[in-house]
Image (tube, one colour):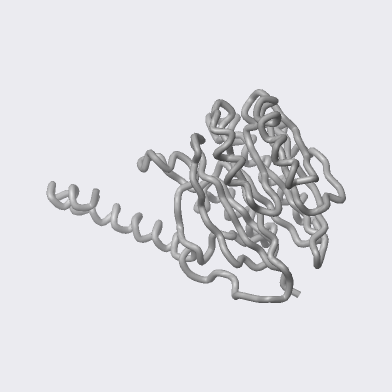
Length: 260
Protein backbone atom coordinates (compact mmCIF):
# COMPACT_ATOMS: atom_id res chain seq x y z
CA UNK A 1 0.00 0.00 0.00
CA UNK A 2 2.83 2.42 0.86
CA UNK A 3 4.57 1.61 -2.43
CA UNK A 4 1.37 2.31 -4.36
CA UNK A 5 0.94 5.65 -2.61
CA UNK A 6 4.53 6.59 -3.40
CA UNK A 7 4.14 5.58 -7.03
CA UNK A 8 1.10 7.83 -7.28
CA UNK A 9 2.97 10.56 -5.39
CA UNK A 10 0.45 10.46 -2.58
CA UNK A 11 3.17 11.20 -0.06
CA UNK A 12 0.90 12.10 2.86
CA UNK A 13 -0.97 8.83 2.43
CA UNK A 14 2.31 6.92 2.23
CA UNK A 15 3.51 8.49 5.48
CA UNK A 16 0.20 7.71 7.18
CA UNK A 17 0.32 4.06 6.08
CA UNK A 18 3.95 3.78 7.22
CA UNK A 19 3.08 5.14 10.68
CA UNK A 20 0.14 2.75 11.00
CA UNK A 21 2.33 -0.17 9.93
CA UNK A 22 4.94 0.76 12.55
CA UNK A 23 2.30 1.04 15.28
CA UNK A 24 0.92 -2.36 14.28
CA UNK A 25 4.42 -3.90 14.36
CA UNK A 26 5.08 -2.44 17.83
CA UNK A 27 1.95 -4.17 19.14
CA UNK A 28 3.12 -7.50 17.70
CA UNK A 29 6.72 -7.35 18.97
CA UNK A 30 5.90 -8.84 22.41
CA UNK A 31 4.64 -11.98 20.69
CA UNK A 32 8.20 -12.73 19.55
CA UNK A 33 10.01 -11.53 22.68
CA UNK A 34 9.49 -11.58 26.42
CA UNK A 35 8.04 -15.03 27.00
CA UNK A 36 8.11 -16.81 30.36
CA UNK A 37 11.41 -18.08 31.67
CA UNK A 38 11.88 -21.83 31.79
CA UNK A 39 11.32 -23.35 35.23
CA UNK A 40 11.22 -26.87 36.61
CA UNK A 41 9.18 -26.18 39.75
CA UNK A 42 6.22 -28.41 38.81
CA UNK A 43 5.05 -30.84 36.13
CA UNK A 44 3.71 -29.40 32.90
CA UNK A 45 -0.01 -28.85 32.41
CA UNK A 46 -0.96 -29.10 28.75
CA UNK A 47 -4.14 -27.52 27.43
CA UNK A 48 -5.74 -26.97 24.04
CA UNK A 49 -8.75 -25.32 22.49
CA UNK A 50 -10.55 -26.42 19.34
CA UNK A 51 -13.22 -24.28 17.70
CA UNK A 52 -14.51 -27.10 15.53
CA UNK A 53 -17.15 -25.22 13.43
CA UNK A 54 -20.55 -26.82 13.97
CA UNK A 55 -21.01 -27.87 10.33
CA UNK A 56 -17.55 -29.46 10.11
CA UNK A 57 -17.50 -33.26 9.81
CA UNK A 58 -13.77 -34.01 10.18
CA UNK A 59 -14.42 -35.64 13.54
CA UNK A 60 -11.62 -38.21 13.41
CA UNK A 61 -8.94 -35.66 12.49
CA UNK A 62 -9.81 -33.48 15.47
CA UNK A 63 -10.09 -36.45 17.85
CA UNK A 64 -6.65 -37.65 16.74
CA UNK A 65 -5.14 -34.20 17.38
CA UNK A 66 -6.52 -34.13 20.95
CA UNK A 67 -3.53 -35.10 23.11
CA UNK A 68 -3.38 -32.51 25.90
CA UNK A 69 -4.32 -32.92 29.57
CA UNK A 70 -7.32 -30.62 29.10
CA UNK A 71 -9.14 -29.92 25.83
CA UNK A 72 -11.85 -27.31 25.23
CA UNK A 73 -14.16 -27.65 22.24
CA UNK A 74 -16.30 -24.79 20.93
CA UNK A 75 -19.27 -24.69 18.55
CA UNK A 76 -20.32 -28.22 19.48
CA UNK A 77 -23.87 -29.44 18.93
CA UNK A 78 -25.34 -32.81 19.91
CA UNK A 79 -23.77 -34.49 16.88
CA UNK A 80 -20.32 -33.21 17.80
CA UNK A 81 -20.70 -34.26 21.43
CA UNK A 82 -21.70 -37.74 20.26
CA UNK A 83 -18.60 -37.89 18.03
CA UNK A 84 -16.38 -36.77 20.92
CA UNK A 85 -17.54 -39.58 23.24
CA UNK A 86 -14.59 -41.69 22.08
CA UNK A 87 -12.29 -39.25 23.91
CA UNK A 88 -13.67 -40.46 27.23
CA UNK A 89 -11.43 -43.52 26.96
CA UNK A 90 -8.53 -41.20 27.78
CA UNK A 91 -10.44 -38.32 29.36
CA UNK A 92 -12.50 -39.59 32.31
CA UNK A 93 -13.75 -36.12 33.27
CA UNK A 94 -16.02 -34.12 31.01
CA UNK A 95 -18.37 -31.12 30.93
CA UNK A 96 -20.70 -31.06 27.93
CA UNK A 97 -23.05 -28.23 26.99
CA UNK A 98 -24.10 -28.70 23.34
CA UNK A 99 -26.15 -26.08 21.50
CA UNK A 100 -27.40 -25.73 17.95
CA UNK A 101 -26.45 -22.04 17.57
CA UNK A 102 -22.62 -22.27 17.34
CA UNK A 103 -22.20 -21.49 21.05
CA UNK A 104 -22.16 -25.00 22.47
CA UNK A 105 -19.01 -26.08 24.30
CA UNK A 106 -17.45 -29.10 25.92
CA UNK A 107 -14.38 -29.70 28.05
CA UNK A 108 -12.54 -32.99 28.51
CA UNK A 109 -9.89 -33.55 31.17
CA UNK A 110 -7.43 -36.23 32.18
CA UNK A 111 -7.05 -34.43 35.49
CA UNK A 112 -9.74 -34.67 38.18
CA UNK A 113 -12.43 -32.01 37.84
CA UNK A 114 -13.33 -30.86 41.35
CA UNK A 115 -16.07 -28.33 40.58
CA UNK A 116 -17.79 -27.12 37.44
CA UNK A 117 -20.57 -24.78 36.37
CA UNK A 118 -22.01 -23.01 33.35
CA UNK A 119 -21.88 -19.23 33.79
CA UNK A 120 -23.40 -16.38 31.77
CA UNK A 121 -21.64 -13.03 31.49
CA UNK A 122 -23.88 -11.16 29.03
CA UNK A 123 -27.55 -10.60 28.31
CA UNK A 124 -27.42 -12.81 25.20
CA UNK A 125 -26.90 -15.82 27.50
CA UNK A 126 -24.01 -17.48 25.69
CA UNK A 127 -22.49 -20.09 28.03
CA UNK A 128 -19.09 -20.14 29.70
CA UNK A 129 -17.55 -23.26 31.23
CA UNK A 130 -15.93 -22.69 34.61
CA UNK A 131 -14.24 -25.54 36.45
CA UNK A 132 -11.43 -26.33 38.84
CA UNK A 133 -9.02 -29.20 38.23
CA UNK A 134 -6.55 -30.90 40.52
CA UNK A 135 -2.98 -30.96 39.22
CA UNK A 136 -0.05 -32.56 41.00
CA UNK A 137 0.85 -29.24 42.60
CA UNK A 138 -2.28 -27.12 42.89
CA UNK A 139 -5.93 -26.60 42.09
CA UNK A 140 -6.26 -24.65 38.82
CA UNK A 141 -9.29 -22.73 37.58
CA UNK A 142 -10.15 -23.25 33.90
CA UNK A 143 -12.55 -20.89 32.11
CA UNK A 144 -13.72 -21.66 28.56
CA UNK A 145 -15.08 -18.61 26.75
CA UNK A 146 -16.91 -17.75 23.53
CA UNK A 147 -18.63 -14.35 23.47
CA UNK A 148 -20.69 -13.34 20.45
CA UNK A 149 -18.86 -11.69 17.52
CA UNK A 150 -18.98 -7.87 17.45
CA UNK A 151 -21.36 -7.72 14.49
CA UNK A 152 -23.60 -4.65 14.65
CA UNK A 153 -24.13 -2.46 17.69
CA UNK A 154 -25.81 -5.22 19.70
CA UNK A 155 -23.04 -7.71 19.01
CA UNK A 156 -20.34 -5.18 19.87
CA UNK A 157 -22.08 -4.19 23.08
CA UNK A 158 -22.70 -7.80 24.17
CA UNK A 159 -19.11 -8.87 23.39
CA UNK A 160 -17.70 -5.96 25.41
CA UNK A 161 -20.17 -6.51 28.25
CA UNK A 162 -19.21 -10.20 28.35
CA UNK A 163 -15.49 -9.43 28.67
CA UNK A 164 -16.11 -6.75 31.31
CA UNK A 165 -18.13 -9.14 33.47
CA UNK A 166 -15.65 -11.97 32.82
CA UNK A 167 -12.85 -9.71 34.08
CA UNK A 168 -14.75 -9.09 37.31
CA UNK A 169 -15.23 -12.84 37.74
CA UNK A 170 -11.55 -13.61 37.12
CA UNK A 171 -10.54 -10.96 39.65
CA UNK A 172 -12.33 -13.07 42.27
CA UNK A 173 -10.42 -16.26 41.42
CA UNK A 174 -7.85 -17.11 44.09
CA UNK A 175 -6.23 -20.11 42.39
CA UNK A 176 -3.99 -20.19 39.30
CA UNK A 177 -6.31 -19.39 36.39
CA UNK A 178 -6.41 -20.17 32.67
CA UNK A 179 -8.92 -18.48 30.37
CA UNK A 180 -9.09 -19.86 26.86
CA UNK A 181 -11.36 -19.83 23.86
CA UNK A 182 -12.63 -17.74 20.99
CA UNK A 183 -12.62 -14.21 22.43
CA UNK A 184 -13.91 -12.73 19.17
CA UNK A 185 -11.38 -9.93 19.58
CA UNK A 186 -7.77 -9.41 18.57
CA UNK A 187 -4.89 -8.72 20.91
CA UNK A 188 -4.70 -5.10 19.76
CA UNK A 189 -8.38 -4.41 20.45
CA UNK A 190 -8.95 -2.03 23.41
CA UNK A 191 -11.45 -4.44 24.96
CA UNK A 192 -8.82 -7.22 25.01
CA UNK A 193 -6.08 -5.01 26.44
CA UNK A 194 -8.54 -3.71 29.04
CA UNK A 195 -9.41 -7.31 29.95
CA UNK A 196 -5.82 -8.48 30.46
CA UNK A 197 -4.91 -5.29 32.34
CA UNK A 198 -7.90 -5.66 34.68
CA UNK A 199 -7.20 -9.35 35.36
CA UNK A 200 -3.37 -9.26 35.22
CA UNK A 201 -3.51 -12.31 32.96
CA UNK A 202 -0.77 -12.75 30.36
CA UNK A 203 -1.05 -14.02 26.81
CA UNK A 204 0.46 -17.48 26.32
CA UNK A 205 1.45 -16.49 22.77
CA UNK A 206 3.92 -13.90 24.10
CA UNK A 207 7.44 -14.86 23.11
CA UNK A 208 6.23 -17.58 20.77
CA UNK A 209 5.45 -15.62 17.62
CA UNK A 210 2.34 -14.37 15.90
CA UNK A 211 -0.14 -16.14 13.68
CA UNK A 212 -3.81 -15.84 12.74
CA UNK A 213 -6.30 -18.24 14.31
CA UNK A 214 -9.41 -17.39 12.25
CA UNK A 215 -9.72 -17.40 8.47
CA UNK A 216 -6.05 -18.39 8.28
CA UNK A 217 -6.51 -19.47 4.65
CA UNK A 218 -7.84 -16.03 3.70
CA UNK A 219 -5.02 -13.63 4.53
CA UNK A 220 -6.99 -10.43 3.96
CA UNK A 221 -9.31 -11.59 6.77
CA UNK A 222 -6.88 -13.69 8.85
CA UNK A 223 -6.68 -12.43 12.44
CA UNK A 224 -5.87 -13.86 15.90
CA UNK A 225 -9.12 -13.97 17.89
CA UNK A 226 -8.55 -17.22 19.79
CA UNK A 227 -6.38 -16.95 22.89
CA UNK A 228 -5.06 -18.77 25.94
CA UNK A 229 -4.31 -16.33 28.77
CA UNK A 230 -3.22 -17.26 32.26
CA UNK A 231 -2.42 -15.82 35.66
CA UNK A 232 1.04 -14.66 36.67
CA UNK A 233 1.69 -17.80 38.74
CA UNK A 234 1.71 -19.88 35.56
CA UNK A 235 4.62 -19.75 33.12
CA UNK A 236 4.27 -20.69 29.46
CA UNK A 237 6.79 -23.30 28.40
CA UNK A 238 5.42 -23.71 24.89
CA UNK A 239 2.63 -22.34 22.69
CA UNK A 240 1.64 -23.37 19.19
CA UNK A 241 -1.09 -22.85 16.62
CA UNK A 242 -2.33 -26.09 15.09
CA UNK A 243 -4.24 -27.11 12.00
CA UNK A 244 -7.84 -26.24 11.12
CA UNK A 245 -9.03 -29.76 10.15
CA UNK A 246 -12.07 -28.42 8.32
CA UNK A 247 -12.83 -25.58 10.73
CA UNK A 248 -12.47 -21.86 10.07
CA UNK A 249 -10.37 -21.65 13.27
CA UNK A 250 -6.95 -23.07 14.09
CA UNK A 251 -6.37 -25.13 17.20
CA UNK A 252 -4.29 -23.68 20.04
CA UNK A 253 -1.96 -25.65 22.33
CA UNK A 254 -0.07 -24.48 25.40
CA UNK A 255 2.22 -26.08 27.96
CA UNK A 256 2.09 -24.36 31.31
CA UNK A 257 4.05 -24.74 34.50
CA UNK A 258 3.25 -23.62 38.01
CA UNK A 259 5.62 -21.02 39.49
CA UNK A 260 6.11 -21.47 43.24
